[in-house]
Image 1 (tube, one colour):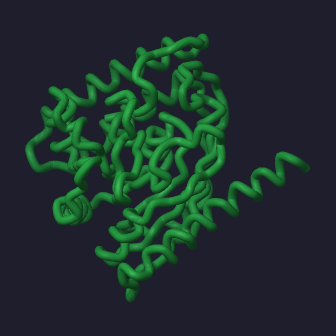
Image 2 (cartoon, rainbow, N blue to C red):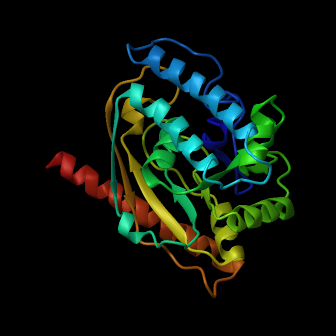
Length: 273
């Protein structure tokens, strides 16, 4: 359940890059240095992951967005954030229209990012997940039960992805993609891949851009030291896709990238002032 979210985009779709941990998404082994918060955070997260898999597999088949599944996912997310000392601030929830489904995109700074979005947005989210995760015992069936979207990193099947996205939307969920293709190792925002934007255009639903900040300072890529801190989610105005074609994917991508980058520039200016 952590693995689907430390995502990279291969051919415009989400997967996890080679050499990453199959569950947490970053480097394979736990490496020093650890902090005082590392052990309780990892212990709490591991226990919550096992509990979430059991609860999910125990749910009635077909209840991908049920009243039971969503609280399980949010509890799982908070089980990581609480011992890590994350203080979450969410701005712009007024941009989210009740009943509207979105392709949600965000910049990617840390393995904590999926947990932050699950806990902070309060929306049913279905992430694009690499195929290898679905092959794992317990985790794979749990991901299928939830309705996460399976993607083969080496040979993405656009038809299968479109079908899974359609099912997620029909189940009342939003599709979530980290369009950078992985976490930024220097804190800068990387180029976006077009997969998320092609999906939004194909299904005629808005892009919801979110500017994320603060998780890198709490759990940096390649590190296992956890330090408490403040995380911000700045939800931007949705970008409509009605009337667009796949030829508009690049323009839509650049518009969303600019919206998120503008927030980060404003935050940087405030810090320097």
